[in-house]
Image: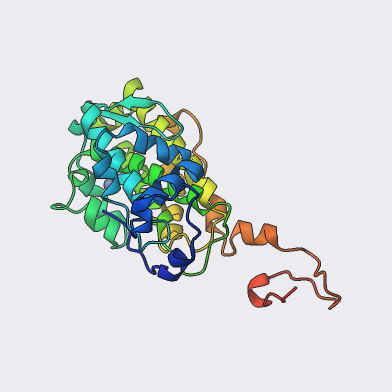
Length: 300
Ligand SMILES: [Zn+2]
């Protein structure tokens, strides 16, 4: 399932300077050559997925010229699924790959944790029966965790250095990875509490290593996104859920280390905005701007 874009910035796209290597297709209104160049220049790990997929038409089919990021995070996400199915491996952010551990398909059905979450599109799609294989098969929950890690990583990379974010570019990039991290964490919690066969399976070295590698990358990418404001709408409640003590304790046993809660993503004022604010107002008004949200920016 894909995020819903809450606003589409046609104006921003129309004003976007085209790459120097503009070819006839781009001149004819096809943004795909420019999109691939932007991916190569700004999001090399997403570009690596474009390079890895044999069926370039599949990747290019997800590009959407009307979207602020041209649909590139979606194209990367869906292509990660494609590569995963074709090669029976998880391609990893920052390179490398892991064989899919098919033994996890015998674990309890992820739909049993659906009731732990308040209703949202991610729960409906990934945990309720009838939409996706992940509701009955933990292997596909891992598949989505990895796809959303690539998805958010691409979105973060495409946002720099234009950060914090351009007007009209408010999208839900962080929600998907927050949801999948919450699903995996609460799945581990339930396994430890009441599903002994799955719990011992999760602690098997090959499975534990796979979960650890995927979780570790998800954790880093999530943390890297925290400074970008307006990058999620449901992310905070989902992050709070997987940062609770019981899922964290279960994860710790699988990872062999304490998971790192992305606390910076929970702050009401984005980190990047705070870092960008001078503590002392450079204009001589005599006031400290302790809370930029209640103190409108001055035109200096
Ligand atoms: Zn997916």
